[in-house]
Amino acid sequence: GQWVGTDGIAVSTFNNGAFSSSATDTGSKLAEGSYRYTDPRSVAITFTSLLRKTTVQANCAVVTDTQMNCTSSSGAQFSLIRKASTPV
Image (cartoon, one colour):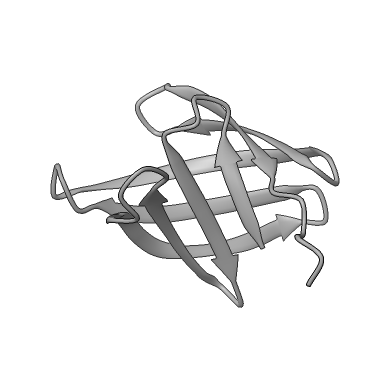
């Protein structure tokens, strides 16, 4: 599904083990990588920042069905909020 950072800068997409992140304003891809569940409430993400050309690892706790709290390998903390599905 799609998740938005609380800063509103990017939309992250999780789809069958593939992770990507795109700018909300331009749609430009910012990062790509993979993710896996380490247990039912924990997700490990490994991605490459396309701007910085660096690989980042983050561990996320799924605190609710609509929120993940994450900490990156550099110690940065961020939260992701699930985007509501838009009815067709």
